[in-house]
Length: 56
Image 1 (cartoon, helix red, strand yellow):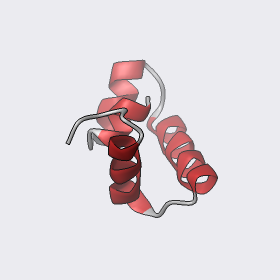
Image 2 (image 1 turned 90 degrees about the horizontal axis):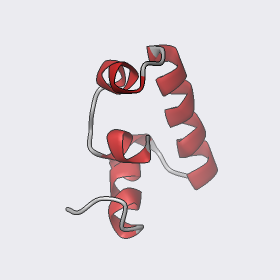
Image 3 (image 1 turned 135 degrees about the vertical axis):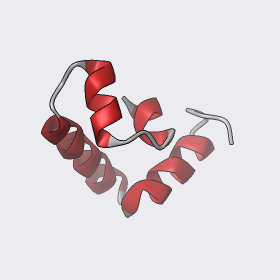
Image 4 (image 1 turned 90 degrees about the vertical axis):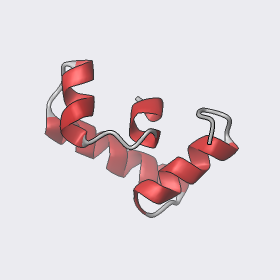
């Protein structure tokens, strides 16, 4: 899921890819932001690049 979030897919696209609800995606995204101490999608993208999860 980290890769899908970091690659700037919409919550709906992620939910469809993982066969889960949009609300579940949003909860997971909020949890990631909180645990990593980040703010917003851009923060997640930057973190994913630094962690080597995705390439710029």
